[in-house]
Amino acid sequence: MENILDKTKKLLGISLAGAAVLPLVASCGEAQKEQKPMNILFIMCDDHSYQTISAYDTTFIRTPNIDRIAADGVRFTNSFVANSISGPSRACMLTGKHSYTNGFTDNSSSFDGGQQTFPKLLQNQGYETAVIGKWHLTSEPTGFNHWDILIGQGDYYNPTFIRNGEKVQREGYATNVTTDLALEWLENGRDTSKPFCLLLHHKAPHRTWMPDVCDLNLFVDSNFPLPETFYDNYEGRLAAQGQKMSISNDMDIVYDLKMADKDSAIHSRPDLEEWGRRIYRNMNPEQKKAWDAHYDVVIEKFKAAGLTGKELDAWKYQQYMRDYLRVITSVDRNVGRVLDYLEAKGLDENTLVVYTSDQGFYMGEHGWFDKRWMYEESFRTPLLVRLPGGVKGESFEMVQNIDYAPTFLELAGVEVPADIHGCSFLPVLKGEKWEANRDGVYYHYYEYPDEHAVKRHLGVRTEQYKLIHFYDDGVWELYDLAADKHELNNIYGKPGTETVTAQLKEKLVKLQQQYGEQQFIAE
Ligand code: SGN
Ligand code: CA
Image (tube, rainbow, N blue to C red; front, side, top):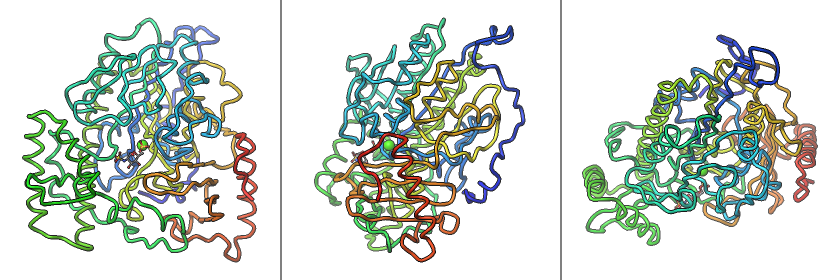
């Protein structure tokens, strides 16, 4: 992907081609009265990296359907999350508030559904609202006319959903089934006299990256180069030294990489191995047949090769990437089905379409899979937004997932409540100047101790710098993103950084005060 900071220099570089901005709020004037209200289609995947969307980066895969949203809308290059993990990220989006305020700080939390959310405010405005797919907030959804959600993380094959409180198991592959349910609701389920807001939230491509059977034979001959930082030694970064998300050391051969051979000759971590086999047992005979036809061949080759050391690392990386990209292929195909539906029904003319992920993901950078860190690959998240009549192009504004709620509200003509932390980026979509109400982007991750062993941290990012505080250990990190895009060189405490450090700490404290986070004021 191109250097973001080079691009940032071209700030405000949005193309104004086709920028006939529609009057969005039907409040005054004849023309506006005839304007149909805007629907909202909010598509989100789980763990989809911007590295694997060709509108961002063509290194790995082509995603022609997701790219349709970018081609007709805005690609946000500097799009960030507030807390890089599923439940917290979703809670930030629903409320427009940082984790400390919305109360959902890590995946063991339960969302307080009594609080203000954008679906509730849209409902009050006369919208028909629905959430279909992954929810992951423990408590039952509130503020939706219709909900049909996966249980917890959900399963890739034959998943059980909870439809308005009732469990229903559905045969098929999760991404297809979730899309079917969304199309069914759009076609027959909703009250067509009202504008709609549909949250279509896929489980894919979450671990363990299980492809649809029809995509198993894709990428078999592809060989992806290891990222430059694959063998990072984490020098100068204490927290990174203790993590457990390394492809070499923590990715399981059977559970993650599907080497569950029939004679059990391959052994892995017993608990994970058992989970891997259980997932397989959940498939129907037809699915198992297709699965075996593909993986049995890979398993035999893998056993015969007897790989160790760096050869084994490289094999794991290829296997991981192939499965991940197969899962993305299915996501892209299903995004295409939904966009086609909107076009066929003429709904594309008055539907805002958003494509995003609950956070970014590591494609082997620093040797990792997973997310959680404030480092770029997991702090950033894809964000493509198509506003009918809006501008097309790329925006370098630093937006965050707390901005989605106010954007949707402003679009719907709802006054944005003053307690929302985010800032509507609707002006950006309309090609207007954006006045964000923040001084840098604030981040706070809380989930420790837990799987992958990422220490709690908070920080601030500006266009050029990032300051991170691992507060339980009193450790600081500072990166100059212009000089060190891979964040390998922690310059905190180095001579010459005193002024910038003091400025960033001041910004951090200011942001904590602005967001009412009193808990961890930095020194
Ligand atoms: C599961 C995964 C983890 C992942 C978390 C959080 N393990 O616990 O690898 O980090 O979800 O992911 S697994 O063995 O169950 O796959 S999140 O995106 O839902 O927050
Ligand atoms: Ca996720």
